[in-house]
Length: 303
Ligand code: DGJ
Image (cartoon, rainbow, N blue to C red; front, side, top):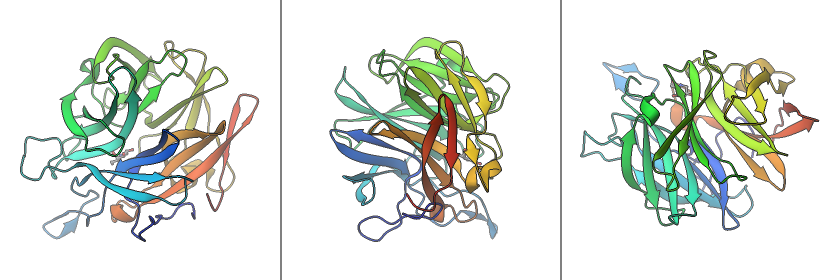
């Protein structure tokens, strides 16, 4: 898989799983993400940097390389203008975790109006990793806005968090989920107040919490920053740009979306957005190296 390009599935079709995540359920890999397989929208002949909502796709794989499309597991709802899945809205950065307590797979995504002024989070659940997912609700977590977001489950405590850019992207919030993962406990931690970080990706390694985030420049790449901390509750500390080498100041042309672990190695997933041809936006998966606690990410041509 050539990093920075749009990859193909086992049928030769472009993988449509943007702003996504790779995770493992029962020894199989699953990749969820935005299906953007449509022409960019046009208004009065002018091309816009958006595509209508098509839904959330799921791919499965045994080896992280050959991906099989399991279908659109949460499809758009073209007949219901009030639905967050109505094509004229925004459905971005879907993430899925398994809830032991209910036995459900729980998806959260950033749900918005076309102009991004609504800033909600939406939740859907399924009995299987490959859907169908049923929409449950649309909310403002702890009365905060939600734009770019991710899910993070703390293996130690089992607690899960919806981590979302709020206050018009000024601050990142960690909204703790209740035992069903579909609601909030009311506990909410702040990270990076006033620092304007988005595209959050979190993981835990050797007892420390890490995050990688991007700056807020729309679809254009910018410098990533990593942060580290001993507790989620008192905010992680922003350290530095983890990227090294040519293109490091623009995250090699990409933007973070998720970090997954395989055999105690961590991998950063990037989207390489093509704002005027979003369906052909590319992907990268880059290994994360550590020198003690310092994080280093270098470009590799292939994953
Ligand atoms: C940056 C975000 O990271 C993307 O997910 C998307 O919302 C764009 N902004 C829209 O401009």
